[in-house]
Image (cartoon, rainbow, N blue to C red):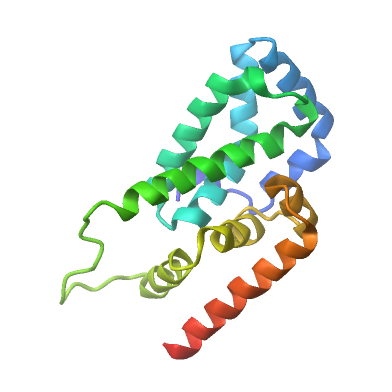
Length: 185
């Protein structure tokens, strides 16, 4: 994990408190100020990385997804209608970029399995990431946003544009599937 992503688990929560600052930075970026866009990316980088890592389960793929999301956001900043929703807009972009990367990865043949005889220090983390990767994309998104990025159920509903009840039921389904996987181990 990059050092900037592990500094403070709740660093992304400052965005909600600092919404006025983010909104003013987003307004400047919307007017074409590249320095403001860089500042916006700097404020969002931890949340973007954690969201992508939660969906993809792989550090290097998560970094690729963040790069792609920043590129897409830079290209599409003019399409941001309301600067106050910049965080939600950016999170939607990272979710789409991560899901695109995930779909592409499924079609590639890779040597993901650890060869026999090689010891993996983080075996439990590797197994857990594999369990999360086995979930359906909409369940992976919820797990990522809730547990990796620290969003509330209400915030997740706003980001994904679905009712809060749907978020709760998907989260419950995902957690039940993960419990079953753990019990079967």
